[in-house]
Amino acid sequence: MKQKLTISIQDYLKIIYELTESGESASTNALAKRMKISAPSVTGMIQKLASSKPPLVEYQKHQGVTLTREGRRAALEVIRHHRLLEAWLVQTLGYSWDEVHEEAERLEHVISEDFEQRIAAAMGNPDRDPHGELIPTADLKMPVDESLPLSALRPKQSATIQRVQSSDTDLLRYLESLGLVPGAVIEIKAYSAFDHNLTVRVGRKSAVLGLNITSRIFIEKN
Amino acid sequence: MKQKLTISIQDYLKIIYELTESGESASTNALAKRMKISAPSVTGMIQKLASSKPPLVEYQKHQGVTLTREGRRAALEVIRHHRLLEAWLVQTLGYSWDEVHEEAERLEHVISEDFEQRIAAAMGNPDRDPHGELIPTADLKMPVDESLPLSALRPKQSATIQRVQSSDTDLLRYLESLGLVPGAVIEIKAYSAFDHNLTVRVGRKSAVLGLNITSRIFIEKN
DNA sequence: AGAAAAATTTAGGTATACCTAAATTTTAGG
DNA sequence: CCTAAAATTTAGGTATACCTAAATTTTTCT
Ligand SMILES: [Mn+2]
Ligand SMILES: [Mn+2]
Ligand SMILES: [Mn+2]
Ligand SMILES: [Mn+2]
Image (tube, rainbow over all chains, first blue to last red; front, side, top):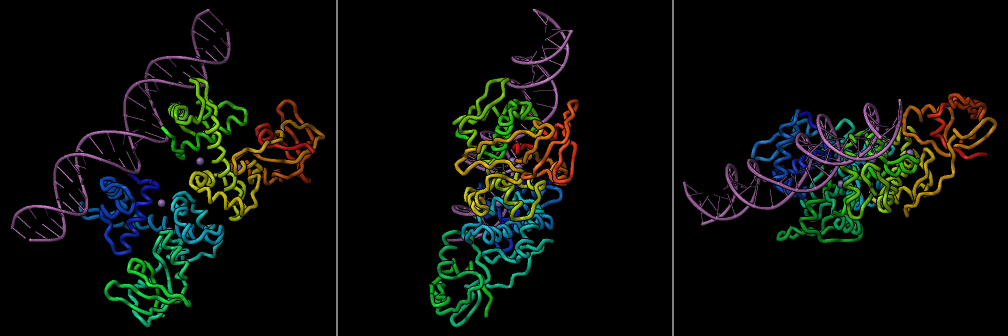
């Protein structure tokens, strides 16, 4: 059947895109965990997505899924909505970067293409959201991301923060309090090989960051 | 069962409120027609709304429904969202008054109370939407409307347009082209008893309007 | 009043998107 | 290479919100 892109389907495609993009496989369990639903529910849905016309995912039993061209387009449409909305909520309604995600999560599925175009134009077609994540273009291409995880840096190296990959309110608030936001210039002061902790200076503050933070902050070397 | 206010339920409550407010009875058929669904579907839903805890409507078989206190509150919440959104779309994104309805219809169900509060504050807590419809207050009281239908006026009388009760794109565009928008000062030039046509002057333009237009424009006499 | 018309409800379905329990398949460790 | 654990799928349900056809109730009109 010619698939109607329900909210649920849009969310599956978006999550599959995000998992795949970050190198993880879009397995049944990974999807179930990320979406907080049961594994059988995921199996049912990916079977449906795989047999829709046109197919939105490629699926081989027990092997997880990858997006087809059509699936990827649909995913990028949702991601564009999400990121434009986040930027717009921050720029026009004074939301802070830790508050926007939930709101965008619901709005992304109901705005029209006209609305999308209007907020994009009103903001001068931004290319990044408040977390520094790249916004897919109007013709649904994802710009190439050149950044490296902060965890790849070592003492004496200096870099500029490009993006922070997180929607965790507490983490985002913590990072903001340290000045670890997109655009910030940082310098590595120390590295601990045992626990992979990095001591990072930004301005005159320093912080010791564990791997689950340094792997979520992406930078470009200076 | 303690009712979750689904999008569908929100729409029922809103329509019931609007029908009741405009003096029509919220009968099964009236609801079915307005919502473009079948009469049996309406019966099923109003039975559910009547037996939810707390009940959202009062229902007697074959007699249609009225909103309970809780049902009215929920309806006013949706209507507040809708009208604030319409105002917001016009004021900040340059939508015209004939374009806002559809977009608001989808957004009204997914915005947070925080979003509602932010757009209301950003606009200085407006009391009317772009069509002149009154916006329920933050504590969900509907302001009293003093206006009369334009159809009640007769030659020589002058009045100011308060609101236009329509979401019909074509009608709204037509009225705007004539200058028949909220705030416009009009004068009745002629009345035809047979067809209830009114000849109305606004600025230096005149137009002959039938009852299905003059009963949807509400005015206050000058 | 009585019959026809109109409005409404009941009966019986469908599609979507979830769920738990049980069966099966894959993977990993000894 | 074989078995236990982990991952996944199948089987069988639920709730929501629609639908059409048929039955019933109410209203209207002569
Ligand atoms: Mn986000
Ligand atoms: Mn979502
Ligand atoms: Mn609606
Ligand atoms: Mn309106």
